[in-house]
Amino acid sequence: MERRTFLRGAVVGSSAAAFGGTLMRGAVYAAPAQPGTGPYGALLAPDANGIALPGGFTSRVIARSGQTVAGTSYTWHSAPDGGACFADGTGWIYVSNSEVDPGGGASAVRFDSSGNVTGAYRILSGTRQNCAGGRTPWNSWLSCEEVSLGHVYETDPRGVAAAVRRAAMGRFKHEAAAADPVRKVVYLTEDETNGCFYRFVPATWGDLSAGTLQVLVAGTAASGSFTWANVPDPDGSPTATRSQVSGAKRFNGGEGCHYADDTVWFTTKGDNRVWRLDLAAGTYALAYDDSLVSGSAPLTGVDNITGSSSGDLYVAEDGGNMEICLITPADVVSPFLRVSGQSGSEITGPAFSPDGTRLYFSSQRGTSGSSSGGITYEVRGPFRS
Image 1: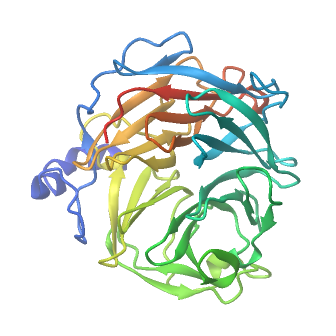
Image 2 (image 1 turned 180 degrees about the horizontal axis):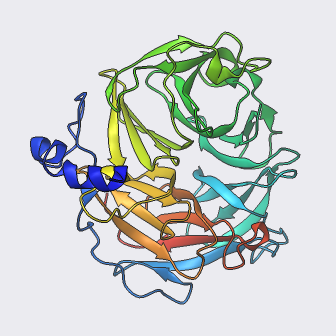
């Protein structure tokens, strides 16, 4: 019997029954999230932009690859990927990576307090295949190169300060980053089929120029306890960082990463999983696994991830049904939005405006299926807080 079919049939009689379908926060063993009705109800028919949303929500197009951002003279980059929002006076800024090689880099769109676009500009150039990244508590954007021996670049969302390569954060196939202001570290994912999960411990919090790269060490089970071990040579040459520490736990294609409330979540696309690290307890478990879903899995092709002030997780699909799915604190997973007519694309860069009322994301290749066809959207509506 095919593994996923077997596990979907078995989960109701084992983990789900034992824990009532609820992820036991802080426990070593947990039942991953199961499908259910989302807090906003069913999706309606696609709107004029081809976006299916729950009632009360609306969408608009912010930018298109190769075209001038409306109201500016700036041409939006190809293959928009990871993104984040930053407060900017009474308005805000949305930053977006460009996953092309060569070229890469990142751009930004500035909004006023009413959400009107007031500017767009380049904040990083001359890099390669900038996939995801993460924002820092001191309001910089970490743009990560998804290439062998790739770097992390610290950039200024306002485009004033020059971008800086942060070599101490290690050279590997970077994907995403998430800052933890409590432990004063930055977590990092690696997009390899046998990749690792890392954290960077800066010598001085707020300065990423020097510090220690560490890798998560744990057993082979899907849940358990973990520790951290120093990576002897963060430069990754001649021995890859993932191959330097005995006992480093392997993850199948690390993607998005999100930190909140002593917890870090990250996704692995190779097995369609969302992992949860309870940092206070020192344990890890599965928050979602499409092979442990009873019935049809609503979330496949897991990729970028972000969270809202309500504790909801928003997980973007690379392929799948071209959806952003929502996982609630009650461990219910459901579609929040669906992009129609763009099956050759992937959803990237979900990020909330500082006030939590607007969600930004991109369809990396749009209707054309090419990197030059990317579309960046905004969704407004009654997001819960």
